Amino acid sequence: MAQYNITLNDEILKDLFSGDKGVAVLLEQVLNQVLQAQATDQLNAEPYERSEDRQGYRNGTRPHPITTRVGTLVLRVPRLRSGKFSTELFARYQRSEQALLLAMMEMVINGVSTRKVAAITEELCGEEFSKSTVSELCKRLDPVVQGWNERSLKDKEYPFVIVDAMVLKIREDGRVRSRDALIATGVGEDGYREVLGMRIGDSESEASWSAFFGWLKDRGLHGVDIVVSDSHSGLVKALHTQFQGCTWQRCQTHFMRNFLDAVPKSLQEELYGKMRAILDAPDVKTARLLMEQVVDNYSDKARKAVDILESGFDDITAVLELPERYRKRLRTTNGQERLNEEIRRRDRVIRIYPNRDSAIRLLGALLMEIDEKWQSGHRYFDMEDYYVWREERRKKEVAESQQSVRKVS
Image (cartoon, rainbow, N blue to C red; front, side, top):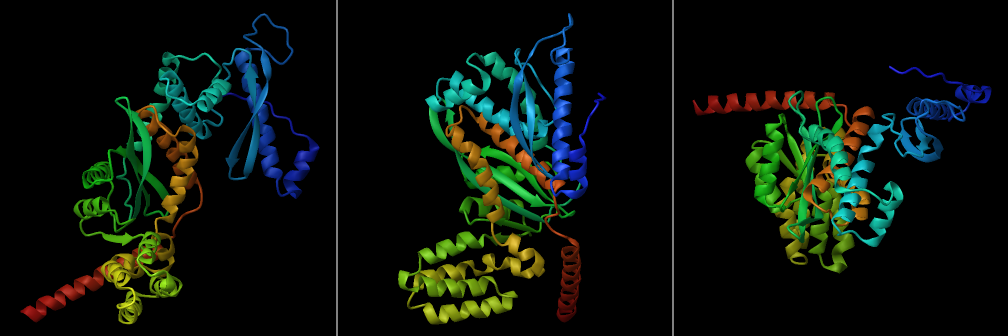
């Protein structure tokens, strides 16, 4: 392991004990000194040092902000005239950047990029790069992303799973085609949220979703109790086939949108409040009473909306069976939507992926970083109440089953 000599001035040491940002400032200075020491190691010479063993020359630095648990740090990454400086210091924060750059390079090489993308790529990597350069970079990044995306899920159970899809534009066989990125996140028995995996499907058909769920199960996904998603027919059919016995919670945000679309404009504000009361009810019994009131009072005025409510009631209120502390985050796919938006921020730069591998690489690298952030952050849920509730439910079901047997006999 390399050893570095770090120097700190008195002002930073004072801030460490008195200022709110002392730790961040200290860490930033330490890391910047490490980067300079690594540059010295690679050049085999100190700045301005005359040496026959010198391997090259410095060419200033470039700022590289990274987000850490103590704040945003701005690292001064050394530039070398040879362009060969490398560091593993913040490799975790580079994967998605590498994948984004690779996608742009592939677009330029294949002649399908916009002038804007070509200009950005040349600014980032210089005007000269070849297919062999791109291929070599892919060999470094692809196994890392693939290894994470194919990792085993056998070590723990995931009671809560949220799934969603987003449409990508991918060039295949000389044509731009719409493909779906199927993404699953879950909350494990330890209460931490994880990105379980991502695959590119030809569509959101039942076959695509069934293959996706089968792939997750082959990797060891088990203990699934509740799955949260929108009501896409192919997804729901595949879900009931692949996860028999688990509960499906239909996203309340998507449902509310569909419901209000069927309500006459003059009644939308009024019925929105009624629906909110149903969704925020303390239990299923109360929610059902409120639903029946809506049915009785609005069947003639908003027949289509009432039909939607009656047919979807059980699916949108499934989460009310859980202890209250788990309901808010599991009643919608809003968390997944925010994850998708993070992906879209990079996706907007590419717009059309040069091939399917490029899409998998970029999305996988970004999801991998998000997953690592979740794992090192705060727990999403304290799962103790859930397991107590689940055990009580199991005992109740056993008792009811025994009582039914005695009645029959």
